Image 1: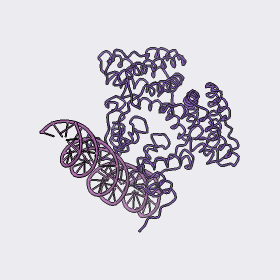
Image 2: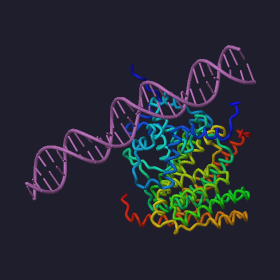
Image 3: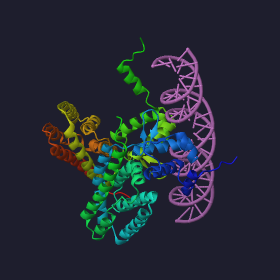
Image 4: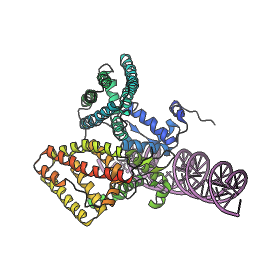
Length: 233
Length: 233
DNA sequence: GCGTTCACAATATGATCAAATTTTTCCGTG
DNA sequence: CACGGAAAAATTTGATCATATTGTGAACGC
């Protein structure tokens, strides 16, 4: 009897060399960060073993990692789900993101060469395309790529890791906001960032990054308090 | 009537009932944070299954969580070990710790009552005892307890989580520093923190916290560059 | 309503397979 | 004959799975 592989497992076949638990982790991470899972949605081990076509051990390990990342939450009674953010959570993330990511963009400015900036600009142009098309998924991927690429120039793995962890936390909720308001209402400061980068103006890059973050996160905070006026604590 | 359960036994049962993977995680976390494992030391799954007396699945899950925490590193070829910090790593952690933990102590100041401050002072007094006795292990535990308790007053779980993650990263290396120089050479600003807390001077608390962090981390940075003058990249 | 029972999902173990490191052996060279 | 290095065997460790056990929530009867 040959097992018919579904499309979810087909995505895994790309890098066949890596261990299964690593592949499951990367797959789930992308699904969470780019909002393919809805906040509050329960995540079951057995459901994933079936949809991903692997045993439960790799799935368990991936879920543990994502819980430590804050990308999933353990609901006490053996239940795991995608986190629902409170307005307090978002407020803390705004502070942390501005602190960490401003510094990352400042450090990136010290190290970039013009080729790097060109790469960044190309990503931003494609990003504009997704906004024009209303392509939410593409927008989320390219917006992340823009920031990740910028921060990679800082050569600061520990700070980058902290930033990545924060992105994982708000990914599902950001998707909800985009789904509600569309991509049109998501202004960004990427042009300012690129301009300041070309001028090698580190403080300007940091300031533009902080504004970019604040704009996006404030929008998310509003949408969340709007959607969940009451929370049961 | 045996239907009535008393609180103490219920709490005890709850502690006993924690799943094995959770217990393994907590055990390893403490061992790493308080320096019972040496930086660079390899960590094997089978070694832990024997020393902890549990199966490999709980051990694997705990290790995955700790890798996501940055408390353990995956060495490419399936090997896991306690991280060795470079001076660049320490420098990034200084920035991140000061950013996050200053904010936490600032927020804590807004929420504390005098009982909280008394608790903190009691911890600090016991901490002084361990310094006098040269009790490195006790020092590490109580120093952590002091900061964790202070930050818990901020009611900012996401920021606290980021801080905890950083503590896990430098725990093993801090232990090395203490082992080398003893506890005498570790000055802290805890008295300043408590004083500013009593005055409800949030900026003062934040400043004292930043100084406390900077002093400790700088000492660690010196000791590390001293111990590992050359690194092979 | 309350208590018991039932079904399902999660936890944990041991077995099995694969990969990597270490040790051993063998051959060639000085 | 001794030494060094490469190849191969052996051992150790990691990865995955199948299965048994346990706990949880829900349905049912009282």
